[in-house]
Image 1 (spheres, rainbow, N blue to C red):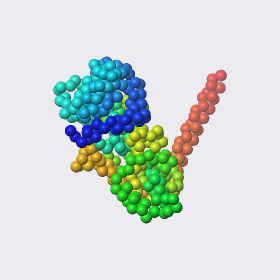
Image 2: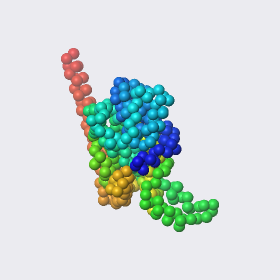
Image 3: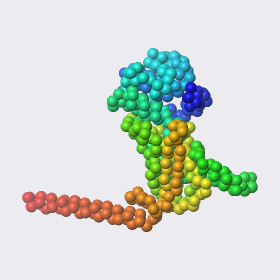
Image 4: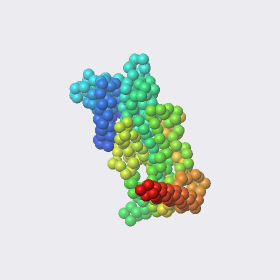
Length: 360
């Protein structure tokens, strides 16, 4: 058995995930909100775990649910189904979805899966969902979730920087410096306070699960991005979070301004901080590249760029002269167009009034 699947046989892992109310209720509400779409339909739950999503689908009237689970938890799911009296509706398939022969299973109308890992794609389970989509989902079938988005924002990380400044009256800044060098070598999973975000989240990846290919998720991001500081502060890292959307329009977000989830946020720690001021642009290149030696892992690379040398959004609120001038030109153009529109409307109204008076 793959070590990845064995790791999910620990019930502590599932207790953690099932205790995450934001996670569980987001799926339940999305499924129950589209009850009509599930009634009488065939559903596949990819990576069923303890089977809670399969049970939700059965509860809203699915005709058949295939709960696909590769770990030994497949036997546990069967007990849960009997306990909830839905063993006739849900069929457990103890297998990787990739090992199921497409000819041995009917096409399904809906695929549900909680496949997201840290920074969305860690663990590489999205590959399995896309395999299921390509081999088992009917044309125009539904995916829960159907859209995934990744965001990033420069941030402050006081837990990494301030802790070593004063420990019961003793300064250990020299230790803190070495500590951050070590922490900057790999992403950190932690909760970032929304007040420590220096800028609005920058959308750097939009994945449409209805059509994206496995090859397209081998490399995520890789472009130049510019974030504009909304306050003075210290640039100490980059915060990454994700949001997924369901076909009913609802979403599950791991953003710092939302209720905390077991995914928390992912931070890339800078070895040294950088003082920034309000409206200062921060330019960076962020790339998530699949590890060639372990397809379930990604290598994250952050490069700090010169904000003067990269392209900014238009309009941009930063304090660089070219952006100030561009923004002013756009505002003047909009004002002129509005004035022209108002003048034209007034002229038309006056003409109509005159014409009406003459006819009298």
